[in-house]
Amino acid sequence: MPAQSNSNWDRRSLLRAAAGLAVAAPLAACGGNNGRGGGSGSGKRLTQYFHAYGEAGVEQAVKRYAKAYPKADVSTQWITGSDYETKLFAALLTQQAPDVFEFHPQIQLVKSGQVADLSDIVNPVKSDFDPADITSHTFDGKVYGVRMIDDPQFFFYRPSLFQKAGVKVPETLDELIETAAKLTTSKVKGLFLGNDLHAIELPLIWSAGAEPLTAKNEIGYHTDAVVDGLRRLRKLFTSGSLLLDAPADFWDPSAISQGLCAIQFSGMWAMPAMQQALGDDLGVFPFPKVGSAGRPSVYNGGWSMFVNAKGHDVDAAKEYVKWLWIDRTKDQEDFATSYGFHIPPRRSIAAQADKLKSGLGAEGVQLFNTYGHFDDISWTQAMYSAWDSVLADCVRKGGDPEAALDKADRTIGRELKKLFG
Image (tube, rainbow, N blue to C red):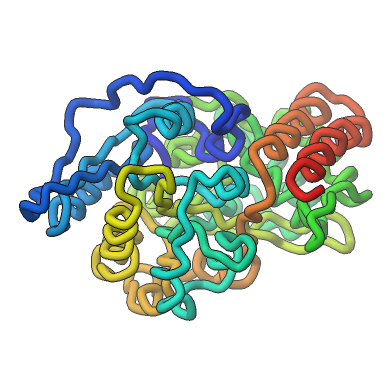
């Protein structure tokens, strides 16, 4: 689910916040409606943080779930704007820190003792989760965080425009570049990859047959195929067929829905809004393979709920997370499929999600199951920032990809040494 469409928020800016938990700052008030629940007279109070989802009804649903909780008064901070991570990280260092918060698996949160071990509430249902969602939240055999939704990201396209231009769905990056050129007209650009291109960093690596990090937590992305892929992206960037500086970023459906492009990289969360605008004139395909040894790829983003290990009542917070994100399966299905399309990480819930069993939703699930890649808990914010610089240096500015990757190697190498010795 994206943030509100009137902000410049990048879905993955959370993963690239430069300072993490390093800088404390006072937390400004985050809106007047705190979504307090009814409580049960126990006197317990909990606060949960959510970023502002863009789909209508999500905020109301989150507060409705909280209000139904019988064992505590749960207050919801619904944080709008482009700086969710700034407010979250600042708040975590104050007495006003949230008891539970949504975020992504990050090893720094574990090593700093910021997030609680949730193995005891996850293990009884562990086999019901997608195994990759468990792996991406596991460190030293302990599970930190409960996955709420899986958000596969891929290309959406207009079949009618493909037919008119006489092109087929591209299977390689070269074909994607050629197809974008043939689809470009005086009014419509062939392709939109997001305003800063950051959304396609990991798909580029995976589609080139590489991994961001190896199983031994060593650099895995610096390969000849990745270098070649960066050179081809530069060609695309300067071709005139790429939509640049769109009114909203990749997470928002408006670029393709408003006819600004024929192909848009985005997430499955945007599918219902695109279908509402375009009807049946919508298809999906994975990020195409890069080079002869490449493979199609689909990045699985998503959100998870964490418990603040330094909160005032960790046990009460864990009990609430268990109640909502483990026990309340109907609410979990509602959250995943009623306000946009997301894949429930629990197999039993995904199996009964009727909206994802047919049509384009089912195609998205199939792409996810066939080509999906998940977050690596060891791929840190500093590593995302280093790769942001790679895209800026060699795709936007036309620099040498080898030099850009060498620079990233130094930053990421220092980070790996700091984390793993």
